[in-house]
Amino acid sequence: MRLTEEQLVQFDKDGFLLLSNFADHELCDTIKDIAKAHLKHKVPPIETETEYVGKSKEERERISDGKSEQREERITVRRLRQVYHRDIVFRQWMESEKIRPILGQILGEDPTITIAHHNSIMTKMPHTSTETSWHQDFRYWHFENDNLVSIWLALDEENSDNGVLEFIPGSHKMAFEASQFDEKEYFSVNIPQNHSLLGTKVSNALKKGDVVLFHCKLLHRANKNSTDEPKISFVYTVKGCSNKALEGTRSTEYNEIPLHTISTQ
Image (cartoon, rainbow, N blue to C red):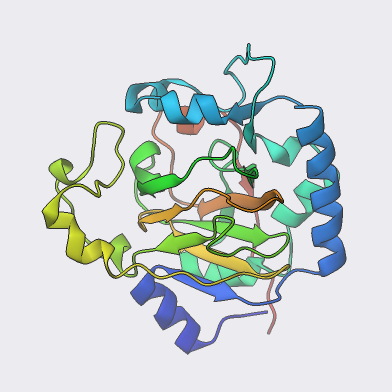
């Protein structure tokens, strides 16, 4: 499968693109069942809600996926980390040949999976989850350039009630001042300078099998889950193969997975 010229233009303009009903529903169910088992038993490495809310910007820079210690007896899991190595089903989705030509089109070269970032099952647990504040992923990552895109797979319905993704279209191309972000590097909702831009936010309700591609500098957020059912999603990130991680940063702490673009001609 390949994107049309119109889709490529839309991604370049908005910084995100919805691929409706892209993944097989049986695959989504299998991924979700495996994820639920890992969540039930809190199979490490994980990130908890407490860790996410309390973590400073410096701690985000210092803590690598899979190396945080959890001492809470009763915790709400926010995400399962390092899913590429958890199960072959997870790995097969991340290496999917169906999506490789699309990623190659967007990146302009062969994609490489960045094991160090995202590579997660993301959750919004009923009532106990917190909202995700406005942020750009690239502010926490360390690469030579911003040629990175994330692949978000909805394993079931995602909407405003259970924490669907929201985006600021075109924000991946905007230059921001440091003062527009708070001490944790979240885009501040309390600064009048940001209000008009925040008013342009958009979101799309997602169904099982929908995939959203979004640029690493795109501002995005999500509400907490106010429903009675958990929302479970799958996200991983790829970069252009020539885009090097900066030595001595957390972006180099895990091996990368190169993918060769599959021709559909």
